[in-house]
Image 1 (tube, rainbow, N blue to C red):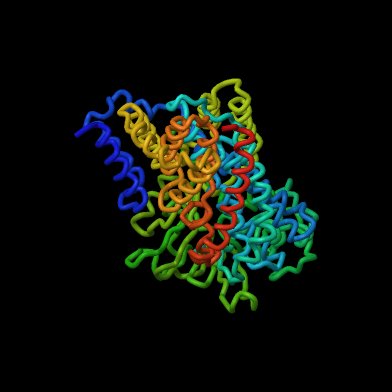
Image 2 (cartoon, one colour):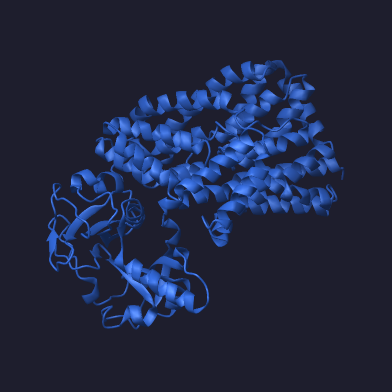
Length: 610
């Protein structure tokens, strides 16, 4: 069988597998690469070279740098700053969406959506707007921002890396901004004024499946809370924390349900209620400390010091663990079981179904659905109780005999003291690569190396932050693109397409390629759709005598703007909390897709002439 025929068969098979996801996309890509090698359609040296390409290295580095920003709390700090300075809730909500668009131009839109999700939900609640009318715009705003720079989405980077194989220059850092910024501005106007009229007003449950805990936080000497009333502190407004009780320094009695005018003093111990990530964010930003955490850090220091090393905060892990049947802890209190002495770990809080039990003594509140809040040290553990446990990695691993760890929350811990350094490294890499001082891949790799060396992130966490399926997909599809061109299959297919599309003219060809790319991004990944369409677009444009660059730009914009279905990762994050239906995305996303299509059709031919 002729090589061209084999390539076309593999091309169709890959399209079917990408669309149906019968196999994971990275597995499909590996199978495709394996078939090319087995059939002799590409040499091993050429096939494997794509795994070490600039595109793959840049993608991997940006995944790590985004995690560094999240770990340092930079993105959360941006959201909290905007929340404090907004004049009214409606302006806050719109300001947040604009901020999300700007942030996602330089970071992963999925990570941006995840971080801003609780902030936007809180802002919509204060504005009297159902969260269902704010969460989908949040996801769409993060996607719109991705079209502004070459690092805005992995799709943009993939396209930039694939262009040189077709004889075109890679994308400039801000080249897409010519069309990306107008799409973002007009798209935001659509989200502000049109989308709320199309979205349903449904009750949402952002915290569904998320456990709320109570925690004791002591006000440290340098805390900005000192001298502020609870109303001024922003604990509820900015951090989503409710102060259940306050105990003055040196006192054994607590003040329950303090009012908004209660003034915080140094040494006060605040018993706050909230979700884990909110408690951690507030703890790092407000100058409050957990005495249990301090004791555990001291214990970890002693253990690590005895081994001849130096203790670091990263040596302590925070996990959720459930009490299982047969555990020796059942029916006993933490005090009776001598949990801290026996396991070298501390229980910060306990969640029991709809009841939250605090570490400090509190008493029932009428506004907590009659749930009892009991003293954790005196509570007899039951099957299914979830403990928030903190301890060294070795101690946590040893809990497996008595508890089952549900999840590791260590990476939710933010250290705002390192935020300036993390931001400096990220901005430095972007400027060095964007202004052409060094290749972007070099700037990103150096920034990652410095982040690990300066302990902004551990090597283990850096490796975990990389989305390996996307890297495998990109490397394999770059190799397939090389084989597609080398065997002449691209020329055969584009010659056939050019005969059909020639009567449409350049504008019609651009519109057709844009529409087909958008259609392909619904059943398959954005990167796969873009890589499939790129050689067809370039070959067809060349055959018809047009400059292929405007068509490559059109495909990049189309692939990055996936709004019609909730299959985009950012959309999946809000799909459940917003209680959306599939048709909700079709109703709102189709209009936004049309908006980006019109803007692209007006701007692309003027900036990149045919």
